[in-house]
Amino acid sequence: MNFIIFDIDGTLTNTKDVDDKCFIRAFEETFSIDISNEKWEDVGNVTDWGITEEIIKREWDRIPRSEEYQLMITNHTRNLKSEKLKDIKQFQEVAGAKEFFNELIQLNEFNVGVATGAWEKSAKLKLDTVGIKIEGICFSNSNYHKSREAITQSVIKQLQSKSNKEPNRIIYFGDGEWDYKTCQNLNIEFIGIDIHKEGKLKRLGAKRVYQNYLNKEIILNQLKNSST
Image (tube, rainbow, N blue to C red):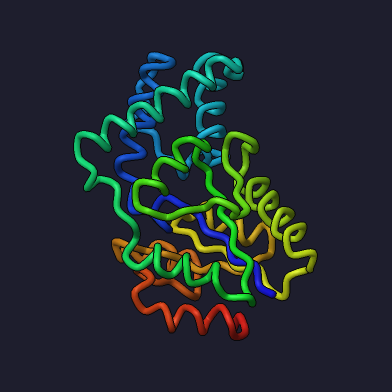
């Protein structure tokens, strides 16, 4: 059995722009700090928890309090709901993602999970909006872990418990350079999604990168066959 793990923003959902916009607005609402010029790749842990903690430590020399995290989550989710009502076209699936995801779930040789650096509520809102259902799917997020490695390891442990088997392969689908680095750190396989054909992942060294899931048979063959 192979474990297949998906990131969300930029990987299953084309929501990076609206998510960034809502996160930046929520940060100013919560902490009165403008982070519009921040570059996520410069942050140690590129997760909602990690970004929030690192910036507050830098600006205020302390970590956020529990109630501040909760307010940040509330504001971020509220902003996403507002943007959804304003223009739902800001929330799209990556082309072919829903069909591909649902097909993998039905195949016995795969056990599927979702590992995202987003807050739990915002992650589910984005998936629900594009019609990707994860009820019963192994899932971890930034509510419970600060690093992407810990989030991904949590999903791997859930998949092991669910299948009661050790995997032949673990393959992670992601779109960010932090996703690629996480897979290197955990020594698991990486498949890149590059919806805007920026070429960043290939420049980093990723061998398998697709723009979307429309050529699903080609991707399925990659998942079923060897990693070379």
